[in-house]
Length: 287
Image (cartoon, rainbow, N blue to C red; front, side):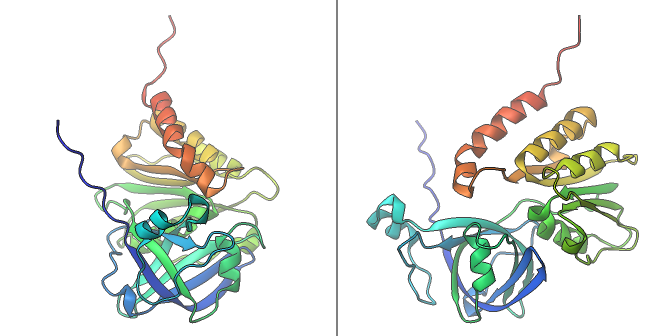
């Protein structure tokens, strides 16, 4: 019986807060930097992400510029004292300045990462795992579709900046209102549609907009991420109704209403497997 490959040890990276900026009422930018970031494996994808580590309540993390051994820490401490992780997309990486930019959706004191971003000060040390990532716009596609809520805004913004001149792309971004819009850099001809949901359910305006969109001819490369229920609806639309091949579609629920990241992570794999099983096989034709 073949042995399973050894699990790769989680590499903890350490950086310092360089500066912060309030972009909109609900979006906070934190720029991390330092020599410890030299050689960070960012650049291949536009949806690169990192997993920030925060101390469990009543504990602290090592205050050192050197990475610490997360696996040893987990061996030595009970689970309730393990660091808490929060996953965020890399908005921008500057390998010359060694600066990693992360944008945080914030709602006052709600959550762990948002309140930290609001209070972060230059010089404060941050520990994180990663980067990971899997998507970048395919230059061979005839056109691109990008759709998401606030959680997908950093990846969509990075993807638009990555598009070559002359690329044909349509981006749909749902936010609470006009005050949450940001100027986005993109090649001439790219169409960006901002959707304001107000008090409506997250994703409702986005689903309607993509459903009503007149799809151009040709091969599309699509990126759809955000709240899980919204993603489920759009996956059905794109895979079954529009017939987009799975390999031309990057789609996933970044988060789910009513769930913490830990809660969503615990059920996400089963949720995705169930949705994939339901939506990969077209319904049988009526007798």
